[in-house]
Image 1 (cartoon, one colour):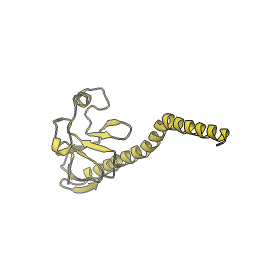
Image 2 (tube, rainbow, N blue to C red):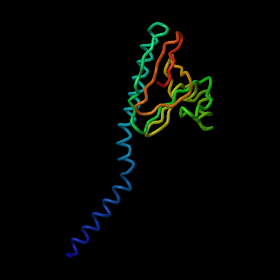
Image 3 (tube, rainbow, N blue to C red):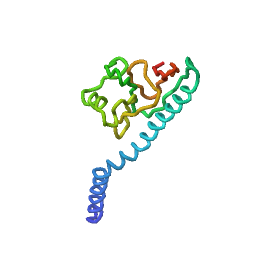
Image 4 (cartoon, one colour):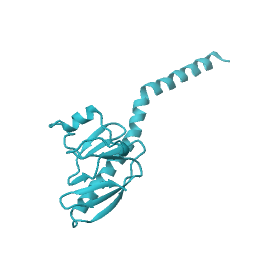
Length: 156
């Protein structure tokens, strides 16, 4: 083999290795951006549905299908009762419980806990109250019901 070809192959291997090592976070961030956008769109769609249902009469109902990416999860929590519901996927650790109970944080009194690709955030949808604490993932269907002063959400 020619000496120049050997050095060219070695240089290419080093260059490819450097791209993987230093570019992995950029590549991961690129894929997370799309996933995060899809997750937040699903939350905004839910917020619009809750607002529309709240404007209707008491007893009105609406099924809602969550369109989440595979790596996302949305937990519906009652800020007045943060007790675990392990069969339904809600099992908060002590750090999360402290965040949800500490006034002054963006998590305080949140009724949604959103786990996206890049981060975990608390979010509050006005007038939304879950029937019980639970988590929903890709393809889950929700049942929304106007209870008068709030809209109750549960899994179908």
